[in-house]
Image (cartoon, rainbow, N blue to C red; front, side, top):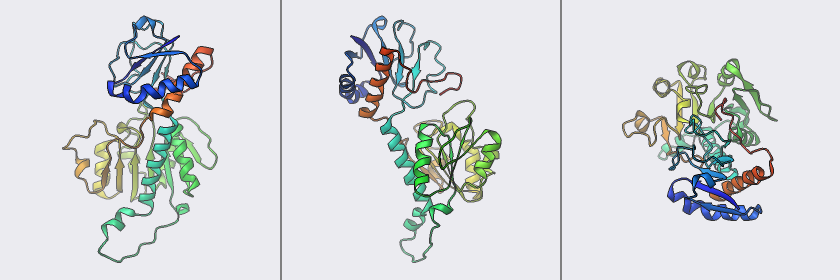
Length: 308
């Protein structure tokens, strides 16, 4: 019997317990899934950073911590977590992110906000074709690649940038500081899907925002600290950046007095771009436990030096 501790908020148990048990059965695993295993009997921990567990020291038998979250910035510095940590790359979450990003890119591309605002006027403005609208994806992990590929399929010329070299069919892939400048130079729409690490904080700042062509638009469903808020507000106030759609923030919920709420050229969405889906993420968890039991490599193992 494999003992699996579910260490997330109680309301998550209701959503995940049945899909996890079904996924374990489908994988041929005999699992005792509980919220209250004695620490020294636990083989695996299904974990959420906002749950009740913060000290991993007593879990001396634990083979791996399997996070339900894609981001690991809230746990990566926990010195008591010495066992392997796997982040969540969930097909359902990926699909949700692709849909959200594609929707907002098309909203910008087709100037849908302008059409809605002009319901009392007949002033036709014909949008360019997708092939005439350069898009830049900052971040080429699983989510960034999935979104970039979808936008490429729709006809957008997509440039991708990442801190390390990547190669994706149809996508112009750049990396490093010089690559970032090149990726931003012609971008009419910029999407941020980088991890939150010290190296990625304020990727968009006063200097890099100035590299964008005037009237560029920004979409951030990645992490709040990727953008310098004050630099973005200055760029919006000057008109250099035409609009920003922001789903993530340095402080969440976004404080009621933050300027983003009232700015006419900012759209705030409440961290809804992508959510881990119970059924599909349960299958990922089950597959990782199966791998752990037979000695195969972990899926989505976190590189602690890289921070993701």
